[in-house]
Image (cartoon, rainbow over all chains, first blue to last red; front, top):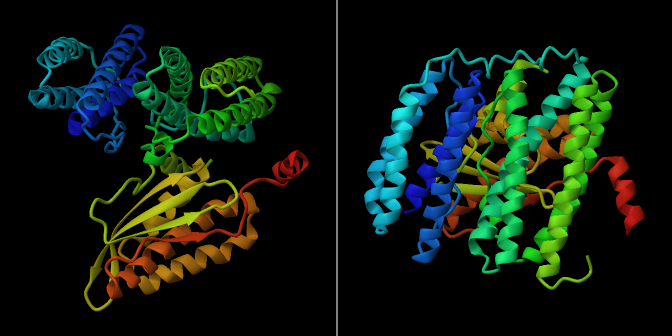
Length: 277
Length: 151
C-alpha cells in the first residue's frame, strides 16, 4: 500500500505544480482543484495504512516537471493516473478504491480536454509582473522563493503526518488549519516562481523531519522557525521595498500571517498540557 | 544569478536515496543539527570507484546547491580522486564567509565519511555509518551575538 501512497503523493504534487504552468485561469483553477482531490486521496490512503498497521513513508521519486507545453505534463499526469488506478486493486477497502477510481476517471476525461498551451515556467526570465528590480533584490527574492517554497511543502507533510497520528480532535483541527495556511503560501510562492521562469518541485522530505517523537519540542522549535521566517519576510520586504511597493506589501502580509501560525502552535502546546507558552 | 546555479536550485542533481547502497556517510553541523547524508554505490575493480551517488539534506538551499554540485563532480571518481575533491573543497572554504562555508563543508565531509565507511566495511561488513562534524558555523555573526545575548 505504501507504493500506492507514493504514487498518489507524486500525483497531487505534479498536479499542483502543473496548475501554475497554465496561464489560462480556468485550466489553472481546474488543475489546482484536482490536486486538492488527489491530496485528499493521499490522506485517505495514509489513514488506511495506519488502520491496517502498514508501514509507510513520504518518500517519492523525482517528478520531471520541466516541460515546454502543458500537454506534455498533462500526458505524464494521465499516465500516472492510469497506473494509480491499476494499483488500486491492492486496497482491500473497496468503497475507498471505487471512490478514488471514480475521481480518476473524471479527471482523466477532463484533462484530456484541456487545450494545449506553451509553458514559460522554466525559461528563467527572472522578472515578476514587469516589476523592475535590481540584481540584488532579484537574487534575494529568488533565494527566498526556493527556500520558503520547500519549507511550506515540508510543513504540509509534517502537519499532515501529525494530524494523521493524533487522537485529539482539537489538535487535528489546528494541524488542518496549518496545512491550509502552508498550502496558501506554497501556492503563492510557486505562482511567483512560475512567473519568473524558475518553477521547481520541492525536494523529498527526510524521514526524521516528520517522524516526530516529541510534539511539544517540535512545536516549540517550530515557533522559533516561524519567528525566523517572519524575519526573512521582513528582510525581503525591506530589500524589495525601496524598489516595489506591491512586493513589499505582499511580504509584510506573509510575515504577519506567521503571527497567526505562532498563535495556533501555542494553542496546540496548551492542549498538550504545556503551560509555559 | 548564474543560470547554472538556478538549474541546481530548480532540479538538484543526485538528490535522493540509494536503496541497497554500499556505503553511507553523514556530515553534520553540531551547532544547529543540520546534516547531509551521502549514499554510495561503489564499483571495486583495481580500486574503488564511485559508480552512483545520492544525497539528502536537512538544511538550507545553499547546502542543497553544494550537494548538487559536489555529487555531480564525484560520480565516476576513484576514491583517491574523491579524496582530492574533498580536499579541494575544504581548501576553498577559507576564502568564503563561515555561514556559506558550513554548507559546502557539510557535503564534503559527508562524502569523506561515506568513502571512509566503505573502506571500513571492507574489513568489517557491519561497520556503522561514519559521521563527521563540521568546524564552520552557518549562523552569521549577528545571529551568534543574538544567541549569546539570549543565553
